Length: 405
Image 1: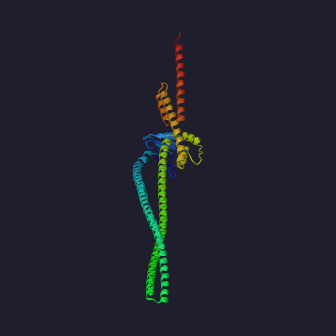
Image 2: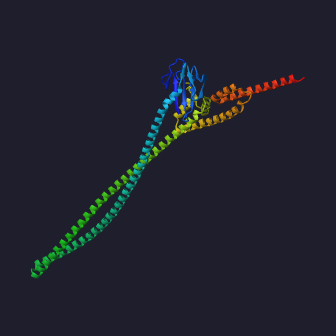
Image 3: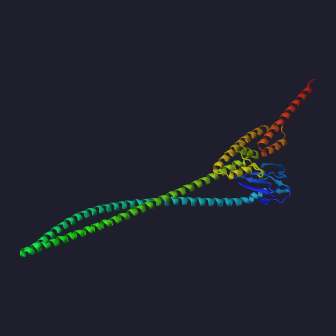
């Protein structure tokens, strides 16, 4: 849809330097089907199409002439000039939209793939890491249990060896004392032998004590490794939690973008349908829509169609749907009424009491009129037919009276 405005003010697309032309005089709209509609913006001196003054909206044919003030507006050339520009812009816009859509689609697919790979890879990594940690923990717990058992065994062996060494030492001391008293070589040999056995038992006890110390040191190292493993497990839990939060955030961002995209597409679809239906409404129809929606048009807005368009553009999608429904309903009603009026018009316009000149005039007026004016035209034709019929009957009666003797 293309709109070109005409007037003295520099804000118009076409500036007309004519003192009789209003600041914002008129606008011409070309819809997507190539149809043209002229809208007089409540100008002071009016707008003339093919020499006849028009008000509100008028459908333009390609060969129609338009005059405002003392200026003839060759309106067709402005649309011809813009046609190639619009086509190139639309093609460029379509290309950009296509590329953007393709990039966005590629990005979303890539993001989903990365998310799946990252989530799957991380899940595989953490699951296997957790499995290895569990196996290692079980192994260390088993080693710690075996070390504790070994330490307990060594402790008992140390106690037994030390007890044996103490016993032999006591026996050696007794034998030595006896040898000193008796001074016999036999007692001295027994004493030396007892001392050697006690020394050997003490050496064995010391060896067992060292093995016990080694077992205790091993248990201590295993406890340290266990503490380190607990720390790694906590770190793994924190990393897993961070990953889950990152995945959740990415999913939320993707979902948000998809919702925004859906809302934008919905707004585009609503706007397209709205433009199609609004273009078919007259100013009176637009006023009815405003009344149904309880919209109050401010004085600075010249017409109801512009006001509805302003309200639609600043509305959210839910409000847009509400406005669109009212506009669509009114458009359907207007079309239905227009079809009924056209059928009524066609059924009486060819009546024999309507002269060719009158018929042409009525047809031109009917084609540019809104539904309310079409009703008036039909009533006017019906009145003419009724008067002509009455006059015809009267003429026939008069002629019959003259023929009687």
